[in-house]
Length: 319
Image (cartoon, rainbow, N blue to C red; front, side, top):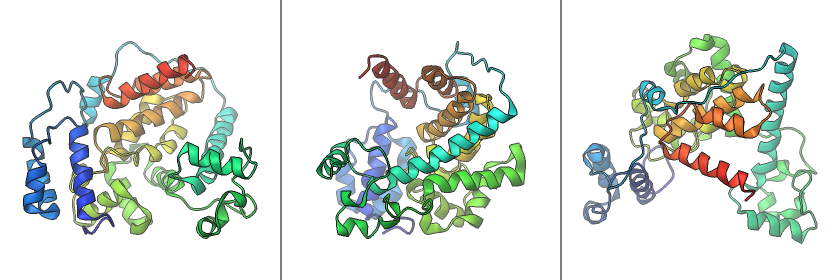
């Protein structure tokens, strides 16, 4: 095993091969090499050879990671026009956003990783579908309850600790200490001082290990990190939206400084997109307008933007 993950080497290699394929590299000829040298040495070779791999034919996405490249690749023609909003409204909406995040986390935490079908079947079985409150203890087996006791409606006394909430608090501390001009290095330093190693996961754990090794952002995002386009940065976005009401571009810029320590490309865009959406939502009631404002802050020809546009089409067709 590698030190930053409990995944076997084979799983890390498969994650890296999948990641490279999604980034547009042709990895079709690498499996024979994997069998020849074994997963541990193969993963090290991938780090060295990544930029030498051929591109897949027809891969047309444009996905820079530098902030200059991202700004250049943004779509043209969409302009967000904020409406006037009072300080009282801002306070109320920040509170609503924070409470909603905590409530949503507590609601989903006991069924994290479950399919929609599994959730529905369990709730139907105990007469709780459609769900209108937190999950009841009856929806779980005794074995499942052992790790969920404080998350069911009969036992909830406070919000449980979760990484989906950790980073909102941590980023607030960074903002309070360093102000709006905080750097990626400030965020990285806060991670090392305030986050336990075993309470961070996937890309964040790889990054944490890289920081301990002495690497600096943005190198921390790519070295032995096959999770560099996963959702980890996106869950860290909220605070940058909260502190930039009606300023989506500023929110996205702050989100970039946070995201670049652990992610690249679409992993970075996710945090920028969500931060911009939250900032825009302070004065925009139309959901599609909020989402389009988020899209205005990320590369137009990225996989992330393509996926969001697809969801908008599905929404408009009521799918």
